[in-house]
Image (tube, rainbow, N blue to C red; front, side):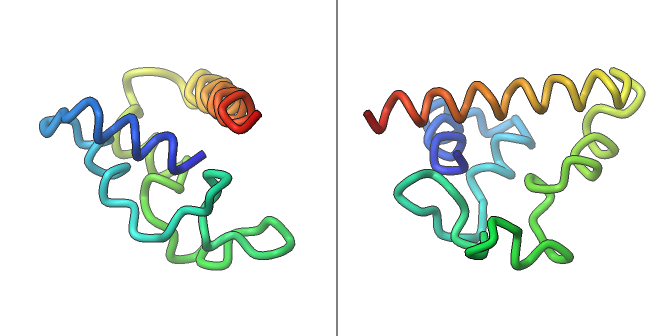
Amino acid sequence: MIFFAIDQANKEHNKDDPIAELIRSFPYKVRADGSCSMLGDDGLCTVYEHRPLICNVDGMYEMFYAGKITKKEFNRVTHQSCDMLREVIINNTK
């Protein structure tokens, strides 16, 4: 999923978008299935305590969205976006 987001951020070339820049600067390798190389065999993040901001839902909300939308709405949209990314990746690997 991360690979798809990085690819989209690079295609859009929006240098003024701080979120696109966070995606472009993702520090870890991405597996062929689009998942982060820092996920362990158990599916949990092995660098959770030091994960990049783009992986930190609460941090992203506080930095970019607090005061603009509610946390509940932000979480709903975040989950919806993740579901859409998963669907795109699954359809592109068939």
